[in-house]
Image (tube, rainbow, N blue to C red; front, side):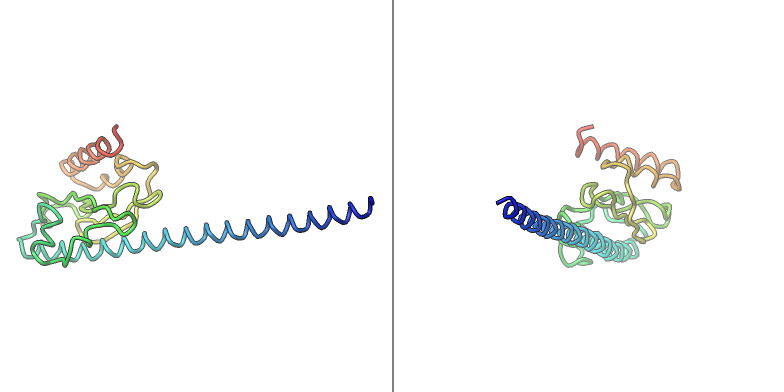
Length: 176
């Protein structure tokens, strides 16, 4: 009886290890798929911002360097085909726009013009700058004020304007 019980325990233990390994394999595989999906969404967002940058450049070229008052003008003027181009593919929220009243001829190239909402991607945002390049920027915490390192290379008036926008967005979205 004791030998039989020992064999039963060994068999049960082996099956337990197999089951645990299968669960671990499934969970690790799932995490890898989630990470890959997040990377694909981040890349898709970056590509969408690049297209949006081309549209903004077209608009600015047609308007003596001025950016539109709002991104929707790009759709109304037929530069973009529909308003889906104004949203991040991750959460489908419209991008944040800081280009109103800016002119490409006078603004610092490092001025963020369009950027993700803070919670669209984990730990980072995609940013379209006034020189129409797109960059993924890491954040210390989920708040717009964590984007203040982007202000370093801007003119003082641009720094002030963008800092006020970041503070306002934090108040709106995070009740700070």
